[in-house]
Length: 97
Image (tube, rainbow, N blue to C red; front, side, top):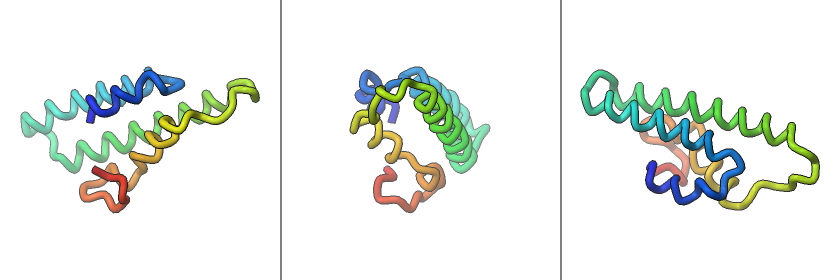
């Protein structure tokens, strides 16, 4: 997932938000691998952070000048690729992987 999202990083208006999400992914992967956290707990943590990051991005965009325009297609697709339902084990959206 981290390698896949790195391709979209240069297109994002706030790439540091993706960096924060990927840092958490790496940290939680280690905990799951060490069996100190379940996969379900990991998914809940990712979902919480992703929701926070989306809200932060929306807040930053609303504070931007009106002529900033719409986000790039790649940005919109990334946001939609990880809705809350995808954070749960066995996500129910067609874009969950």
